[in-house]
Image (tube, rainbow, N blue to C red; front, side, top):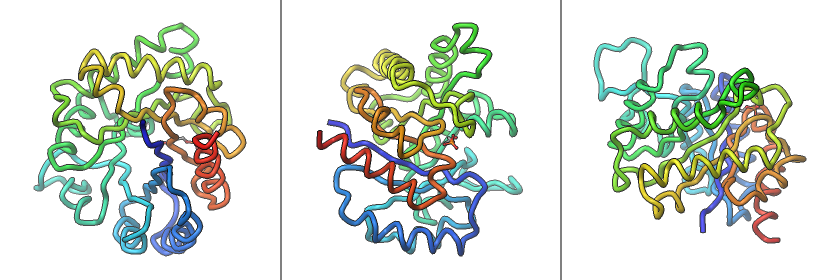
Length: 256
Ligand code: 13P
């Protein structure tokens, strides 16, 4: 039985002060949620204050990126050790915005995944096709390649805690969501690819999320799919009521 994960990717939103006041309220309002793992991924500047506020609560903290080196002369970058020290247990890697605006390649994502795992940070590896690729019918080719490249050289024994997020690029921030059936199909395909790489037992345990315009009113249908184990939520995670709405909808799906 996989515990679903609802993760808020705040992207470049919220100051540390705003993030802390959001998390103080979140912490109290999700105190009774017991079947969903909840995660917020604030910008770097808010990680430590948010982790301090959430310490001892059910809400975990993740970063949105990291650099694949221990330390050194890499101006502007943040290392896995710094993220751990700031209170992170997860790190989003290979988000399509990183790939699109900051030139991240599959190779860089792979390096980051390996370094994150070495440090005991749980990577949330993002994969997904563009609109053009979907229209050309190459979704599974593209997504399969991204998953294989991201996990290249990773063994099942070192990959505990790995999470994969299927985020079709055309559904991010657009209000267009993949239909539950389409998202289920790709998530099931990703699970098969993971089974080929890391074995069926690992693939049966790995959480595969969906991301792209997830809202309280579409969360229930998406989360009811057998291979969708939670959501990576952008815009709707910035508003406390809609984020909690998605968490509650997920918890309710498990009870039905
Ligand atoms: P939206 O939920 O705003 O579409 O963003 C999805 C996303 O990119 C999460 O990582």
